[in-house]
Image 1 (spheres, one colour):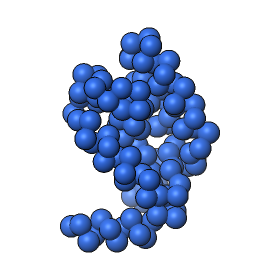
Image 2 (cartoon, rainbow, N blue to C red):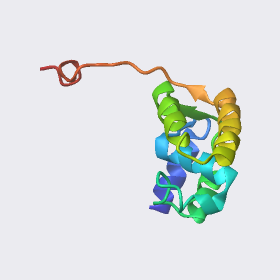
Image 3 (cartoon, one colour):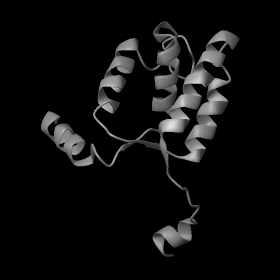
Length: 116
């Protein structure tokens, strides 16, 4: 399994990695306060070591990619943090958005996808 993961990282390190909602939220909460990771209801399934692993993982990629919908959802979920952490989180979030590549999202009905 490690060989497969290493192979995928080598293959996509220049193209980038997609950062989804829960992972981005882990990144933001961990960047503000690693102890909060297990106490915030949206990241409690993670531990601080997961945050450290995430940092090491994303450092291997030249580009981080996400979508406008993911950013919107993370913004909404981060609003559930207490005030001081929320402000810090949004400051980090703003920097992240400046440095991330955004993918356009398109809606396709299930009939088009599966050609019914």
